[in-house]
Length: 122
Length: 293
Image (tube, rainbow over all chains, first blue to last red; front, side, top):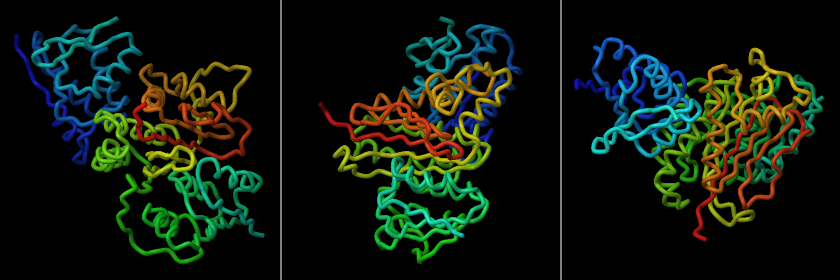
């Protein structure tokens, strides 16, 4: 299986002016998601995209919703399990759980050895 | 004629109401002098609310600074006078420049746009770990949740207030009420407030009871928001859950009402209504030092 890797820490620094390490605010979430969506659009079918949060400090509910929940909802409509989330800390998972629950979804472990997750409907 | 309102000696969220009561009887363009000469202490809420009050006046109010040198020095170290100089006509001498203050986790900072929220979060993270873990004995994961709570409350200004506001974070020992150290986040603005924000939602259903208290309940307890996007409205509701985990207190005042999510150690009331009207929203989060039971 072909994989591509997106480092969200790098995307954050590209998408927002200022050398920030935390994913906070709606506009930042929108900017980061737009970058990731552009990457996904240019990716061939069958390629799994690993979205890596390991270089992100804190992620608030706004960014969890704008980035993870909205990406999941879009991908769910197109091609399930095309996106895998990795490098998630305990606090990232907390924020994501809260926002996905509102959409009737949750994260489940995808590969325990790589600490990666996919979103599934309840 | 100038109306003089005395600033209470100890200024916090409760005693600030003593200022708002006479203030609510004034027209926005009436001349006002806030007399803080005998003030000795102010919480982050008290200081940010004073700046917010000045923003609500059409003519620049006067402000008599505290006479006690340690008080005026501390207020200067919180950054209060740096901002007050732009909003008030200051009466009395204030120290020039700023010195570092270890109990000030975040000095009073304006919040206008999203970039301000980024700046606040980055600044606080540098000091939060040491204070929350070493002084308040919270677990290491609390630092991330704390900065998340700070981010979401600041975003309330950016997303809803339609006017810039203020944030400050301090830690101090709350000897009389709790006998423990606390960390306090205050986020105050003089914007449109919760009620007007929710009223701006297209197609909002009308109900018999609709006032500031209900607007607060809907936004904070039920995550209702003016946006149609179903992902919205999770910020303050999520913060409320975090605060409860730490046995902390979350209080929001908007318009004429105040809603408090109360911990076991506090004797506040959940909803206070018919308060003196004051624009915008004023949020205070209080997290106490953890004690092993």
